[in-house]
Length: 528
Image (cartoon, rainbow, N blue to C red):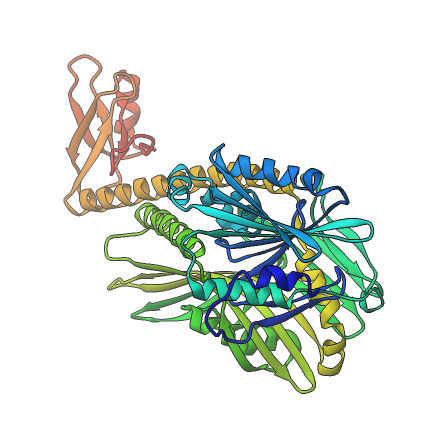
């Protein structure tokens, strides 16, 4: 690995905080990962990125230098749109290639973006990213049977501090000895509904896997799984919480509905997070305490946010889109005076209980709505959680952490499933929207019907309609009069307050008079 230091020396910078050391005993590497950086596996190779800078480590067939650089030159031409320039330099035991005039390498970063990839494909976002100009430095190191290519894709205006981060990452990267690696097998999480695997993950030797696709809401589903070896557990939880508190002049109370990995339930009281600061307590003293029978002590909380320009920009685009959707939802379902807010956060969480530890990464999205009213004020909290959790005795976790890190890094969603599930979710969401709008329309009609009915009742008025001609009349009728209205078939006169079932009603019917349909509201469909 001393050869990789050659590329690391290209990027010198300021003194940096100690990066997080990641050891993956399944895939056989270790690296010091700076804040905001991610590791992922793609078809191209092992990828390190903060969504702005990219380091790609890949194996290539052992060829002559001229043949070996051909794929890299073709790649640069695609990224540069035919405007790329190249420079070659001999390095100790290898070859260095510099390509300039490149565009943003979306083909590499897209797989590490998560749901941000949906926004990266928007035309206005593509236009903004096109303003960044890139250069790529490739170091080709020949080995006994293959060629190791280490590539760094950087914006030309990248700061010295960020270049220093990248240099530290490259100098820290090493491959583990085969005897230190843990054998594993790849397993799929099936989705019987769509008929395709939803995700794949590496299962280390000695571990057992249970996994399925579970609902998080009426429209969205995600894979959840539990990987266990004795008391050591790695799992992915999908959680939905909906809590409401109602206050009336006659009292009120809170209630909470819980959906945890597809299993519904109710929780006493008001259990939700009204801000990102409440998420650690919600998990440690709330959900996990309910699960294990005792609260967990929080030792560390770390917000996990993007640190690069591109990451912050994409997060801002997503936030603006969510705010727009939330405003539309509020206008559709809210009332004048309702207050609405939303938030999103990804956090790292470290907790302990007795001799056990729990380390988690929690992605949380919350929605808060307050509806003030003189009659009944309500406070409504909705929370969506996806939690990656490692659990076990402290000593065992320390020994298994390298294998568990490999599972987390190797977990991947199946692209075909993502496309099918997105289409299924879209259809379900459209059907649900139509249903909600229909309920809202029915509610508005009912409120209008009630308002008009009470107004007419209190003012001694009602509506009557001739079933034969469709003509409608607004007539006087005392509030508690139960009589009916009849109409002369010849002259059209209306006779009211005729006792139902009486002798007069019988005579009028024999004479050909028509009994009118009556409704206090007069709205269509409410005459009977």
